[in-house]
Image (cartoon, rainbow, N blue to C red):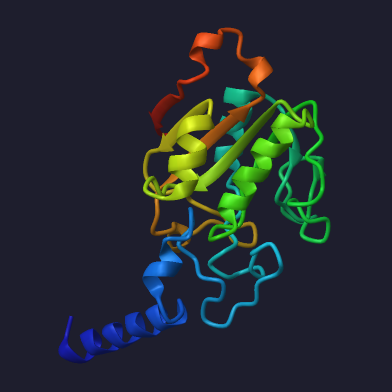
Length: 215
């Protein structure tokens, strides 16, 4: 890389950091996503999902969904979707607001939430809906930020299973997946279940941790 190319790259990197706000470190410590409220001018709605095409929208790839069906059963509700990207017959879109609309399903609830500060709110909402008996199992695709309150206070103590995915997930953008659509963070499948589903009370304080590819 020549001197002029290096200078251009450093200038671009500086511009990207400036897009994260006055304090990028604070934005990156956002309970699970590493995305600021606004990035390079992208507009966010009330629940934190950016308009399609921005760095906050990572659509669930088909191979992830196939693995989820095989491991956990039929997905009956997509709790963070839109009409053009839902992975289930029933879904909750931005207008319905998943943080307000009940997650009612007899089947597995899938949730690939907006990455960023809102991710923790979706985890809290999942636990709330399980406690209220609106669903029995919620499977979530989350960015791995093990030092955050989301992992330390909610996921590690309360999840039934955490599967750390080998490699970076090949997310979809507008129905396609490209090498550039692999994020700069690792991902995990996190499973929460209603307490009544656990047959052995002595196992309630333990989480099943697995890792590897999803195939």
